Image 1: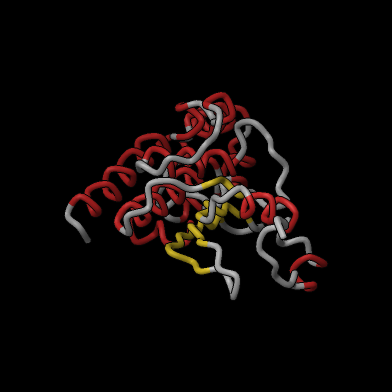
Image 2: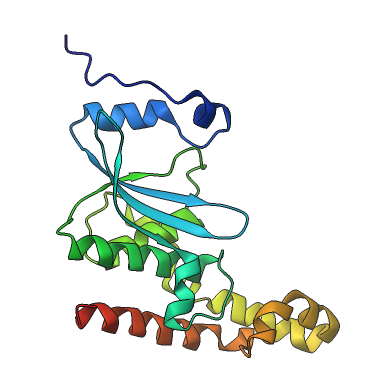
Length: 200
């Protein structure tokens, strides 16, 4: 008695380092059953809002940075702007399902101030989902919209055009100049917000 819910820990996920089950257990016994789960891979960012169930967790909503293409996103799928937009998208989906509060779950990722993880959580919060986190862990507004990338690209284009073309070849091939990333971010953000305002 008094030990909280019992469930079997999937050994494969623990062995592969995909889930921090101790943190998950502490969240569950605290009485908070809705979690905002943020994960990053080599290629993209995923944000899920998950409800604990003793027989298997239920994913209420999910968003991936791969979805951003539907809103016109031409940038990288694993940088600060795309992490924020993915969190925003997940948060708007969650609000549409009546979710207003979720405990952050960053799994085995290190808690690093200003990281992609916290950019995604900032997106969730800006969508209207209350996710407990100190404001000082979030990236600055300039970094969220990619101003640091644009500034670096502008300098690199002047100093080393060959490296510039090589480093930004993917987004250049999509007809996006990295120097224009902040404006492009604002356009995509506005399109996401407008889509949910229409109730789509």
